[in-house]
Image (tube, rainbow, N blue to C red):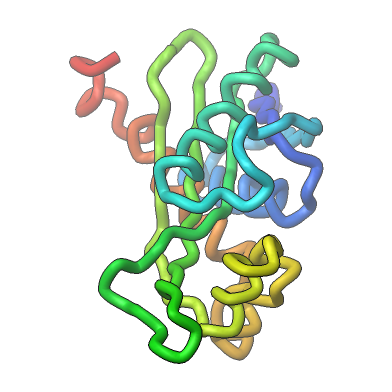
Length: 181
């Protein structure tokens, strides 16, 4: 049996670990993986408020996971956040509405370029936006998960695994990206 590919997820969150495992298995179906989670700070707010801040959090997580466990094959940073939707404004609460965003950043052993992926975003209900913007709650606390809002059609594991799969595109197509490495 071939050696397992070691993946370090920069979180001990079971959802992020499972999403990483599923994403890698889909993109590399003939490989076997050992997925380990470690607690790594994102270096951004607990609730990132822009897509750029969310992306930075994912990159920070992957980079710091590599520093903590340099012997692995891949390091994965997943970060969920929100961004203001400048096209949507709630007149009753005088606040802009928000969109949920997720970023995944992956580093591979021997390379210093991120594989990155971001699944589609979705609009959050006005009350959840108010809880985040006025009460300082994080999206999970405000009960704005994709599973609840889609009535179970899409869950958070699936949403995050799409980000992982998109971030792995550069690694399943190395010849197409070799000029950028």
